[in-house]
Length: 99
Image (cartoon, rainbow, N blue to C red):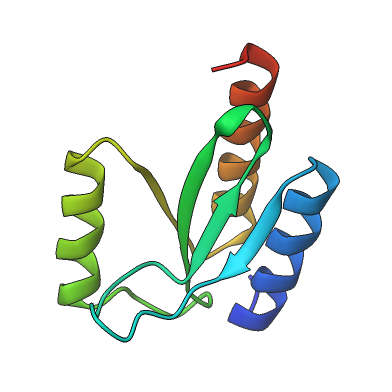
């Protein structure tokens, strides 16, 4: 299990290895937005909410994530090394597939 800061560092490292940008996002206008924007090669874009191993998303975060997903965006909650690995695998597949 990993803490939030460690997961953030691992995510940034993995995204940069794939040639992408891992940007910290702060919204002053909308609460509940995911805290990382992942801008990848081939025009791929993902959002991630980072939580430590014991962290949970709030109700407003859950409804915002569901709204973003309903609009067709890929949004992930990263709360373990396993969920980080799942995200990286999906991004790799997207880059390799040229989607």
